[in-house]
Length: 128
Image 1 (tube, rainbow, N blue to C red):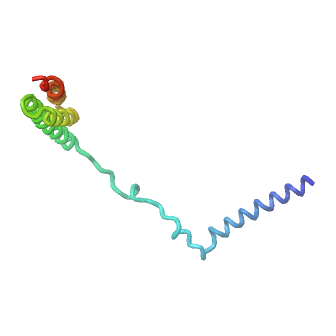
Image 2 (image 1 turned 180 degrees about the horizontal axis):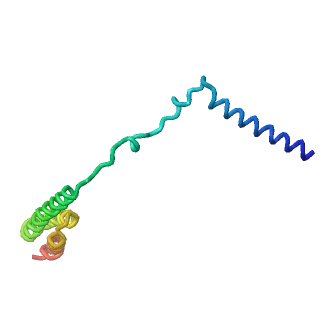
Image 3 (image 1 turned 30 degrees about the vertical axis):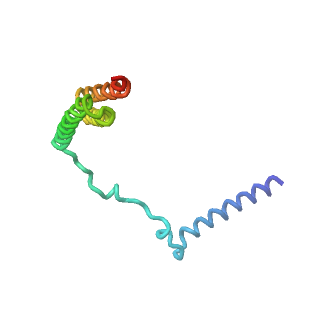
């Protein structure tokens, strides 16, 4: 009885292999229409990035960060005198952007002065 069972299993495996072979060897079944492979990575030439480009990008980021830092600092200082909540919040946001772009100290000063301006504007000025 064990031999019959084993023979049936082998026959089913052979039948499955035959079905697979018929599927791939049959010229009527066009497998290429169903399966498309992405081959752009193999065909495209590798891209070279020169160091000059990286240095220019770093310099542009630092320059734009410095400009944003000074703008944020000006807004924060101005917020001590005019519209403390609105201008202080704008100074804080620009300070964070300036820090992200490389102007660490200018951004930190803008954030600090803007926060002090908001605190003074909300909690101290109403009493005067």
